[in-house]
Image 1 (cartoon, rainbow, N blue to C red):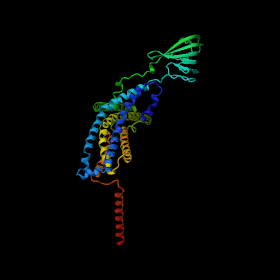
Image 2: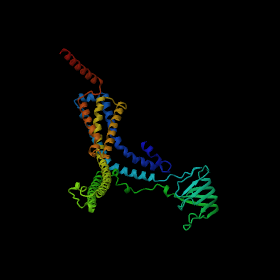
Image 3: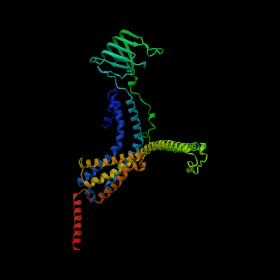
Image 4: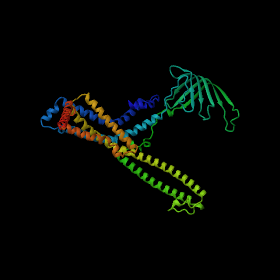
Amino acid sequence: MQFLWLYIDELVGKGIEWYIIVELLFYASAHLVPMALPVAILLSSIMAFGNMGENYELVALKSSGMSLLRIMKPLIVVTFITASSAFYFANNVWPVANLKFKTLLYDIQHTKPAIDIKPGVFYRGIDGYVIKIESKDDDGQMMHDMLIYDHTKRQGANKVIRSERGKMFMDEDKMILNLVLYNGFSYDEVKDKDMKESMHKPLVRTQFDEEIIRFNLSGFKLEKTDEESFSSNYQMLNIIQLEKEMDTLKIKYADRIVQVKKIQHQKFSLWRDTLTSDSSAAAFDSSKTYTILTDVDELAAIRIVDMATNLTRSAKTQLAQFDREFANRRGYINKYRTEWHRKFTIAFSCIVLFFIGAPLGAIIRKGGMGLPVVISIVGFLIHYMLNIVGEKLVKEDTVAPLYGMWLSSIVLFPIALALTYKATTDSAIFEGSTYISGLRRFGHFLANITKGKKTV
């Protein structure tokens, strides 16, 4: 639904076949798998172990001598298989789906809307023509009182056609639209390149009983773009391709640094020669620049100060441009690094969320679609927000991709370990009586301390 609302303007009114839209939605659904798979594992693990706890199946298994980790062992194997499949999907399937999605969406975006000429509205959908009609029949073909502005010569509205009636129909291959006009006039303003703008131009008025205008509709047809045009994008590459591209970008980055240093060294050498070229600054000593203004007259000193100030401003501006350039280059490299780490974080998130969901289900002992769904939504939101924040920090070049892309795992992995430990030791962390008794003990402790002070 989010995809449909985002691209609804690109899909509606272009006469695109239904199977093209279904194909686009199919490719777009691949983008949802990395988000849906971790939360699905979290929800399913909470529901499974919650149902087992609610039906006292966990109690029966534990009473027979099985630990919680032994009970979880088959599902741990399934989770690792799912995580491996997620890694394969992110590395092999997802880049191909992104490539086909971007290509097809680009083709749809550059497809012109279907012809829909409405009465009383100027229609500009056909290149070189502006059409206005007063009314049309129910069949949508016969139109009345037509006004057509011909701009095909790219010389303004120098040709106008008006007819009482007109009929539209397409040829067999639907590439040519035929417009048959009946009983009308054509006004053509003759323009010669040798004529001056101030000269009056002759106007040719032609009457016709029937005239045919043919429009080329090739721009209204969905044309397939070569996928190679988008294949170098970081979202369309697997791990090996990303590593090669990152190596290339790093080499270009290092070469650019060397080039900029060379340019700056040459410019500073030129500016130094410029400052010392004046005969009044003959006493200039590069090792004692502070003596330059005391060894020359006042006018020469002012001239040197102005020149040095202008050169410094120029150098500051250029260095700021170089700084922005290198920041953009680092940001571009970080996009590839981000995508490289994403291949692994998706798989690892499945494992982490399983070790959060399974112990939680064993602790809360509630199955079904009630409390497990609420906990899953909260857990997924935390996981998703941490991913978004970490990725944004990486793209802004605030933190390294290793920390930004793994921020969610770094935060949730200790929680998973703690919950697993609490579940294996049968800790009742979600029972209110546990916290009430703890508060009572703390209250007794404070009371004893207060009594001790009064006795003293």
